[in-house]
Length: 262
Ligand SMILES: Cc1cc2nc3c(=O)[nH]c(=O)nc-3n(C[C@H](O)[C@H](O)[C@H](O)COP(=O)(O)OP(=O)(O)OC[C@H]3O[C@@H](n4cnc5c(N)ncnc54)[C@H](O)[C@@H]3O)c2cc1C
Image (cartoon, rainbow, N blue to C red; front, side, top):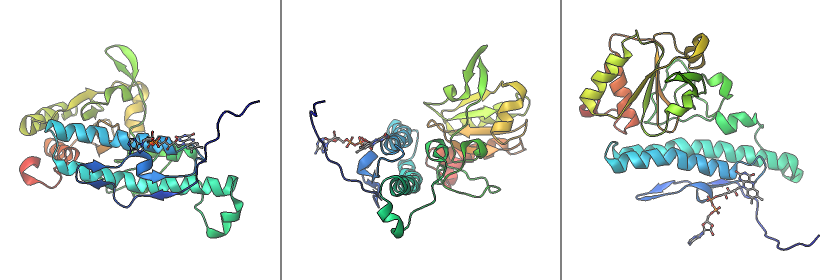
């Protein structure tokens, strides 16, 4: 065996205090470094870019207020800090037992880190009935706002597809039933705000959609282009259009702005 090259690297665990300075936004190892135990470094950087890309696109297109970019640090910094602690804990347990005395976090299921982190910011409308934690097992999150929208097999134009195939370029309202008035509410909200919004009445076997998204048969879920649940209505109500408008205002960086919310 011939060794062609040797490259050195230093195990570090750190997160930058500020993720943005004006037009400069940090992603990847520029924002956080962690030991490679767990294989999270590159993945966390990709998650940063995934979180930021649609926000930049929305602001540059003029669809969103530049305030939306403030949600980048608010959402990514706590998740990166959690991930760095998990990578560090794995490093201590697997490779550097001498660091045990300095303390380290309890390790959690890899799935919580890969698919179960949660965001909290002005671009998410929290569910007051759900306590916030920065991570959970993806099977337990059930569409709670700020979490990754779970996969459900759906029928799309008669063909089997994943609900995830609906996300990517604009916010999408997922509706559990065509009878619940959400499509009318969406039309009203779009007319009043001019927002880009996809609307899908989800056809999934055995009520899987409502069950996996924690809503009833008359509920609806608003998903951001990055596949994160922005808002969830467990059931339809009289003020559906206004509630949806408020949620869209959050997604477009205008939370609490009365002029745009109505
Ligand atoms: C041993 C090891 C194993 C790992 N295993 C995994 C794994 O299994 N899974 C995982 O997800 N992650 C893993 N990682 C982490 C992963 O490699 C990094 O998190 C990831 O590469 C960071 O990507 P980045 O684009 O942010 O930064 P980098 O990959 O560092 O890219 C930055 C680039 O910018 C260039 N650059 C720097 N300064 C300048 C300048 N002034 N002008 C122009 N260019 C410049 C650099 O040359 C470099 O090409 C591992 C890391 C190590 C060290």
